[in-house]
Length: 348
Image (cartoon, rainbow, N blue to C red; front, side, top):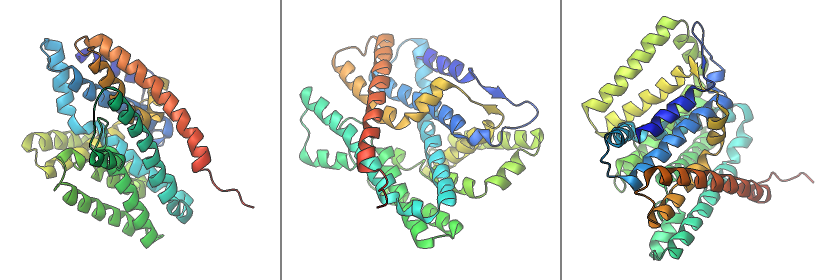
């Protein structure tokens, strides 16, 4: 399994721009770069899920690969949350109140509709494979609180974060710092409530969304300080790396998990200002993150049912190929559906 991680590292290096003397301050947060980084992390998510279908491992290299996956843990979803919070805050500052008022339809409802159509595919596949689901489980799965074999916690978290963002900016309007503080406070409240019902992975990374918003608000000051020269950048990177490892080693309590996630997000952001990833393959994967994230378990479940799991290389190759194809088709279908359900109304 370690070869899959090695191949991903090689792919990430293709087209990478290294700024030896200066920094890519703007390009590091461009859509092109962030999509390429999303592409890396969605493949890490897929490898993490793949591990659960093919373990236990016995070969030494597979054990090492499994260890890498375990060490990364929830960090593989951190940048999705950070970039979402950053992107939403940037859009609110540029587009204003109209964008905020569109949240219930264009962010919350649209995300839920897309997710529910994917859940429907899992329901159909499960029924065809002879699985019987309780009605309550089905209902809760369509609300992302439960699942039918699909990934759901991240979608539930994003739906709630969108709700918090809409409410905060609706109430505080142009007072963007108060709104960001409200999103942060509501997110902490969400963590406390959800911790009573779900596992730690439901809430240990969600504050990275708020971190992305705060980064957007103080972007110019943060970036100008960190990238003032190579020495300051290196010191900041070393401090973040030390904080990341210390938080990981000292304890697995929620506070340290949160600190680890926040350090990792900033480490990637500042690191990408020196090592900028530009890769068309990864960029395509990053543009289809939602579809790949939601659908990747579907071919794995079917292939596992067909007995392909012991044949690791073949299993991964087929699962990857099928995932990419159905993700592309699903994305195409969603665009068609969005043009009907969520297209802006034309003025009469």
